[in-house]
Length: 257
Image 1 (cartoon, rainbow, N blue to C red):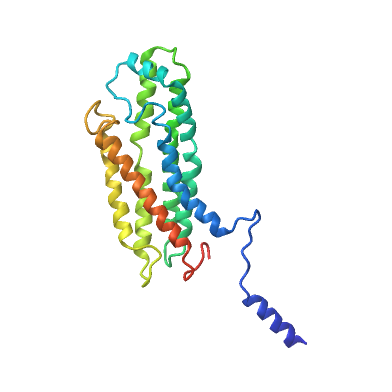
Image 2 (cartoon, helix red, strand yellow):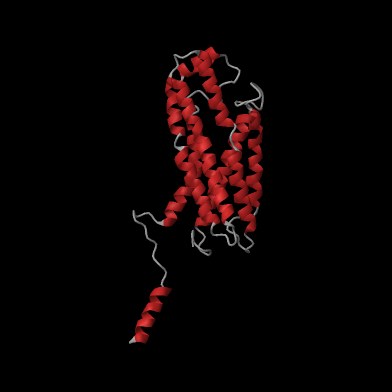
């Protein structure tokens, strides 16, 4: 009898635990949704710009009166765009968490790397949606002195274009983890670390947006806006695609295993 009970316990222990989903969404589906949140974050970051008359962005060289007139003309679009941009605060941390979940499947990745990627992405996400509140505050009282509206507008655009250092932490940690995977079939292709890090080079010209009011490095310029925006968007989309593919890999330990 004891032998039979022991045999039954052994069978139960050898049987894989079923995936528990309290609200009917599997862990895999949740992870894929989180991975898809990367492109959604980029979409919501830029979605409100056309309606606000900010594609391309308004020139930094506009006079205070011209800035006020722009806000008055596009007041509804600016307020709506600011509201949409706040949802980056939902999508980007989800995307960052999806990356961490897959990096945890790579053998030998230090927890420091996982934490750095997660914290860098979440802080970067905070700085991506923070400008929305400054745009909203700028458009809130357009009857103030024009110079104050111009000052708030300057602050909004500098916050929009300039903060990216935390995203470098995220990318460096992600790329480092990829290079630690020495298996014949790594979870992520090694060339991905080179490409994503290369795309971060498009962010660097934005360091000069507070120094000029016209030209390529200005917040509406080719380097300060277009190159940085396209490079950052491509990076997030590319990473999201490969995170999605990694989730489907069944030949490796599951997320968190």
